[in-house]
Length: 89
Image 1 (cartoon, rainbow, N blue to C red):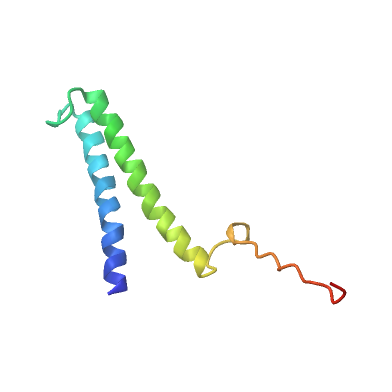
Image 2: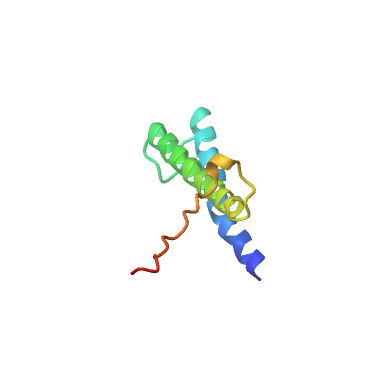
């Protein structure tokens, strides 16, 4: 069940990224979609949809790999030891 929920969480931003690519492609071929009054606005919205969807999916994958220590050393979390109390206190 957890995997199904994770796939659904990744599907929605992925669909936004795909829709963003479609909007940018339609602007390239001068096909204006109904909710947009101008082609340049359609391209900007498509770019934002694509960047947001791709950023969410890549952040999700990076977070999962970081949790499982499958990233390079420079991306691993640095764990600082807790301060110890001396016996005199």
